[in-house]
Length: 260
Length: 257
Image 1: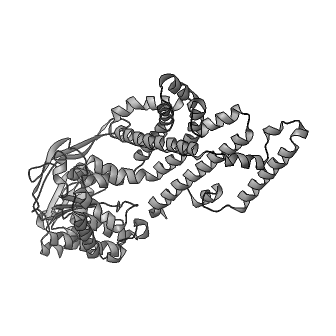
Image 2 (image 1 turned 180 degrees about the vertical axis):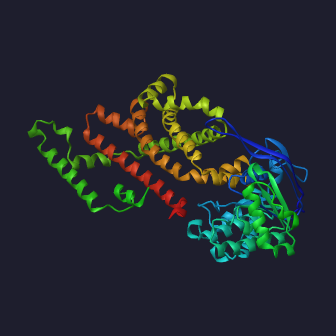
């Protein structure tokens, strides 16, 4: 894996047109954000605040209307192919291919970067074993539980050894115990691999629990707060939680965040 | 095809009691009618007995059967490749689709007989004529089915695939093709029975080999027994080809079990 490049978001803007009326909808309005290599950032915001649009822009599936996302001097949309094998994603739903076994699903991104066949097999097996699915390699997605499927999806993301990992509400649909366990596993692996990890979530507990840094987005992805979560701050959890909640509710930074 | 459907069609390798019974009733009714036909004022040759049909079956020329199968399979493979490639191009380009779509609709509305007449008037070679008719009839079915199926691939899977940045070829081979495979197999089943019927008419009108040609010969000789025998071969052929497709389906779609 290459050393993760810095991510620079400058005056990022994304406007959609409504299909029926043609009216413009501003999903992201002039967002500025810097993410350092190997940082673990939790992006938190209410439903409809533009988190998922930001996710699509980061992956390069959408073109910004204005401003830019620059990763190591390249843009994910304009230099789409450059990031093959560099950015990997875990989605809210596992999004496994139903006709492929667990092993073959993990192999998918490795086939796309044209790794030799034996290396594909070795690496896929390794990641399935790391995620505790060594004895389910030949199982099809419909034969696995929701948590197991999400593990396969995580293994698939790690298999390419990406420099940037993106997770969009990846644990939100799982039960609390499974979600907490998977979240921890995901973070431990991301840190071990030295990847930059960006987790998008609407759950405050998750954001506080995982992030080195919490970015709070308001309507139209307006940057409301950017909190570097030092270990001592995590001990202030209830206060931090309330401050972020109030920030989100009022769509403006809570004064308590300045004191933290 | 669903296992229930397979059983109903008698394609699961076993004949149900009901199937055997209904076939038996038909055979007995036919045999009885063949014996009493002259007494009922029907010419004897119009309803031949099974002994006479059996004799006709013994004279079936395998070469004609092979020629018809080759024509059907060859044209279906060509139609499939052509239909799938065009569907992929139309899926990629909305403007190409807006130009081609009306033409495809027009092609699909043209009756088979018209295609046969066009082929006879336009082309000299018999094989080319037959291939043209089969491709003109079956190609659009493959195209429309493939395109519809591609559009039905979930947005989530498409997004996941694109996030890994595949090449266009990888996108189609790793996602689109396997995702639409169940629909393609259904198209093959539909087109198989369509192609058998179309090739028979095309051979009947303008060929000197194949089952259709043999049917034309039987008609000229007023031999209902021969027509019956060749028809039996056609039906058996269709069941056999469908059974092959079902086998392929069971193998490639075993993940759905």
